[in-house]
Length: 113
Length: 112
Image (cartoon, rainbow over all chains, first blue to last red; front, side, top):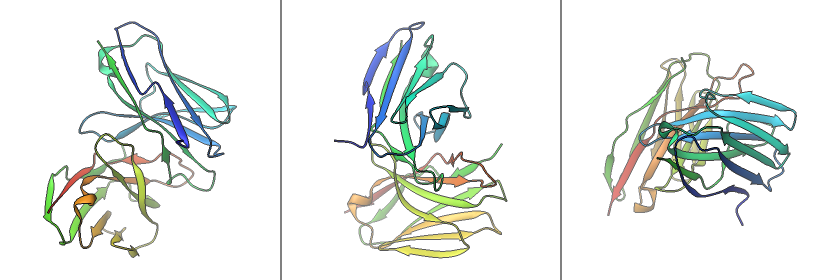
């Protein structure tokens, strides 16, 4: 089983719908991240969390919200999805010793029609 | 705006050759540098990191860092078809920052 699990892996939805992407990890890491990847573009950080009570905005947080339900669970919500949020979303974790070694989930491909 | 620039490629090399991937960054104060490999349809995985000027070798991979010129490179010796992937350069600006800035990636194709 993957150490960082994302659900759903694929989702097609319509404009205006609320969508939640979920991430759970068994690595025991404190830090969790949500990234977005668009074709031909780099990974962009949406939100990150260092513990259950610590949530921080990344580069592109507008239109997104997150919830850290437990050390192992970090969910990303799109309150009202729009087509330009069509992308591949990755959850990642890291331990507290550094910010460079990220362990990624398998990704959630979201299509907003 | 902190930027990390990579040639998008594709970079094609014959099997057995050396593949050279380059990355430049804009924030002169950046502290640590990472190379991630991403196979098509898969998630990125860390393959190398480097903190100090000079070379760092790990098997067939060598990371090179030149802070004065603000570039970091990845050399892959004896390239194999299994090395065909997109390589992402990532930079941590340090100074308490926990946000990696990723380049757009260079697609490498190793031709048998």
